[in-house]
Structures are given as structure tokens and as C-alpha cells.
Length: 608
Image 1 (tube, rainbow, N blue to C red):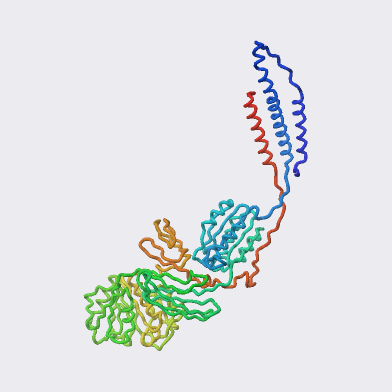
Image 2 (cartoon, helix red, strand yellow; image 1 turned 45 degrees about the vertical axis):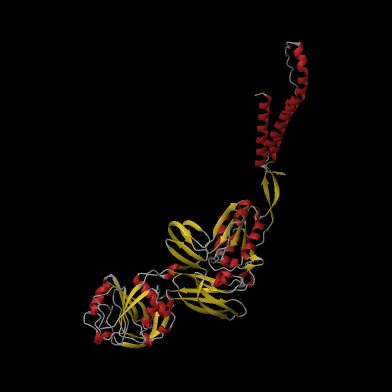
């Protein structure tokens, strides 16, 4: 024991007067005894009490002696030197809760191993962070029992990982206090801040950072891309292994197989498979057991049952590609009318498509009636034909047509619901009419010479669209994107909701009115839906399919940064040190107890 104020030890001299007071014998007190008999009867009782009274008196002396000695020592401010490590004060445990932690590891999963190792690091005040795509603090500076309770309840999610942001959160939790940060992960970062930057920030604040690698070789073949339209669903499957694989892929609805395909994929290669999109809820399953089963299945939601009424006005009977597409879209009710029998005064359609009409068979005024009908809230689409400029289209076309030009590249200008599957560049070549955009029009696609070729405008309460690609002279009609484009364009013009709103990636968050939400794992009441599991979520009468679609997260056998040697992110060493521990508070607490004990004895003896 050492002392901060050595002069305070002189206060121990206060013990001398106390000892002198107790050595002075008190003057005897004379008492008159009324009866000899009374004395004889009380004699034995007096003898029994004499020792007890002396003992009690001695106890008070000892209590006072110790209290004075404690006060003297407290004035001297004693302290002791004790060994100390950073983790003795604060420990922040970051557990990777992403999808890849569900990969097999030993007899369990990587997440199981992370929980087991986390329980070995419960020192000091403990904080626990679950590192999903949005890290969450599950415990802040709690006890060991609190930490064990939290660790017993958490489970991995089906999201991407975000170790960098979790490290920054740990830095905020520690604040000015020193601590140790333990990261348990397979270190396959897919989102968030750079791990090196976050680690350096912690170490600059003199915190200790320790990484525990849970990665390893894994056998995995998984679905890494998903494109859902009302007509078709396309999945991309990747073989992450060093050997070729063969398997089957199936699409199921209500556990009944609707379609299947044989899968044969070379090492580190991908294959695409396309299925017709069923109505309602369905699943696509890769029939193969490997070390990461989460990406072997995707869910699909297609709630559309109401038919969109489409009128196709055309004299073309053969190779009418748009007619074939309309007949293939499950939620389209197609009506074909051939001039001169258009009957525009008898329309109850949502969309009218004008495609390759014989101008010699047209009844004057028909397009005026179609234009008037569309202005009432419907839509009209005009497709090109060689003599389109000679046809009186009323005010449907958004601009006058120039001469027909030779083929040119057609490039997307605005990425929206019906062009998002065409990519962000040029997607086909086609002849085109030379036109100039007018005020109030929106060029969705242009040629590489900046001539508008797909144009939209407001037409009264409806819309008018010019689709300027010559299908018969373009290869666009032969691509898988062609039917998807038309299905999404019809859906957009009819006001039907995008099917993409019913098929989301895990990790997305959607605010809703507070209500009960059925998730793949439970039913909860919330106003904020966090899609952190794969499967179906039900709320507000909607069925939403949630899927993990992440090539990086599926690559569970990848060589991470710790093993690649590209980054030096080995954990910093924890240095042992010594610290002064003050004994002032323990001494004051002891003095208080001594004084309380003295008061109780005096009260019991009857002096007060």
C-alpha cells in the first residue's frame, strides 16, 4: 500500500487521546440497597452481566479506535498498484450476422462458432454488435450475465455484411473509455465503410482490435441473380467450386413442380435459366446439397390477376411480334381489330396499339375518335410502318415524321420500369424516322445520333407513346428483353404496380402503417419492415418475396483479406499495464459501517 498524502498519517496521533480516556477509571457510584434478600437473589445475575458489560464496553473502544484509524488513513489517500489490461474495463464484441455466416463450419455453422468464441471474451463492461448490412447494438456496457442472455437469443440473418460500420459503432460506444474490440467474422465484407479505415480509427484512440477469422473452404453452387417480370423469371446460377457440377433446377407452386431444367456448370462459371412466371407465390429451387443452402432457393411473388384490356389495331396477320407478346402476357386480355372494322365509338380498353395498318382501309375520322378516347384516361401506342407519315394520325403522334433512315444503334436515355432490363447503353439496331422532339415530350430512347425513337407524352388524361423501332428489321424482337419490355410498358400505362415491388432483396427497409406483419420466422407488430430473412412477408394484403441475391455473399469459400495478404489487418496486440487503485472509498465505507455498528450497540445497551 502506498499513500498520496504522507502528512495525513499524522492524523493517527488522534488515537492517543482515545486510549488515555479509556485508561482512566471512572469514580465508583454508591447505591442504597433496600433489602438484603434482594441482594442475594440478584448476586448471581450481576456476576453474569459483568463480563458482558465489559465486553460491550471494549467493543465500542475497538470500533472507535478503528474508525479514527480509518479516517486518518483516508486523509493520507492510500492506493495500491494492480495489473491492468484494456479488456478489463470494456469489451466490444462484433459478431458477423450476415448470410455467409450460415455456411457450414466444423459440426455446426460459422455463426455457431462465433457465439462459442464470443463467450470466451466476456471481460469488463460488455457491448455486443450484430454486423448485418445495418449493424445493430444489442447490448451496451452490460454485465457478463446480460451478455450471455443476449448471445443465447441472437441468430444470423440473410443479409449482406457490414464490418466497417460495425467497427465505427464500436468506437462510438467506447467513447473516451479504453477498451478491446473483438471481431468474429469470415471477413467477406460486402457493404459499408472500409475495414482498414475503421480499424485505424479505433487504434488511434488507443483501443485494442482483435480479428478472429472464421472463413474456410466451402462447397457452394448458388443463385446469384434474379429478374422477375409478369411473363418470365430469369435466374443466374454460379458454380463457385473447382469442379464441374450437374444438378436440376425446378420451379414449384404449392409444392407442385411446374417446370424444371438440367444444370451443368463448369468451374467458376455461370448459367442462366428462364421460366414462365406463375401467378401467386412460387419458388425456384436448385436441387443440390452443399455448404451454403441459403442461396439454393429463391421465392417469387406475382399477385396480378386482373386483366389489362388491350386493343391491337392491325392489318398484319403474319409475323406480328407484338401480337404474339400480348397473347403471352398472362394479365392481358387482347382484342384484335382489323381496319376498316375498328369501331372506335365502341371502345372499353385500357390501351390501344396501332401497328401496321392499311391506310387504304382506314375510315376517315377513326383516329380522331381514338385520340379523343385516349384523352379520357386511356393510352395509345403507335408503332412504325413505311407509310406512317402518309396516315392522318390526328394529334396522337407527338411530332411530325421525317424521312426513314438506315439502321442505327438504339440507346436507352431514361432508365425506368420498362427500360431497366435493357441495360444502360444501346440494346439493338433499327431503321428510324428522322424526327425532332417537341415540347412536352420525353425521349425514352434515342439513336446514337440523338434522334428520338421511343417517345412519350401526356395526352389529355392519358398517354401517347411512339415506339419507333421497326421490329421486322431489328433483332430486338428475338431477345429475351423484348417481351419483358412490352409487359412492363403495358403495366406502366395501365397503372398496374411494378412486379418488382413484390420481389425485394434482403436488407431492404420499408416503412408502413403500424400493423401485424407475418415474416418467414414470426409475426410481429411494427411500422418498419426490415427484410432480413428469405421467404415471404405478408402485410396490408400483400405478399412480398424476399431473397438473398449477392454474388459476394454467396462466395463463402473465397479467400478473404486476412488470408490473401493484400491487406495487413491482423489484430493489434493487447498490452498489459499497471494502474493505481484508490482505497479512499472502501475506507470511507468501512468507517460508516463502524459508526453504524457503534450506534446500534449503544442503543441496545440503553445509553441513549
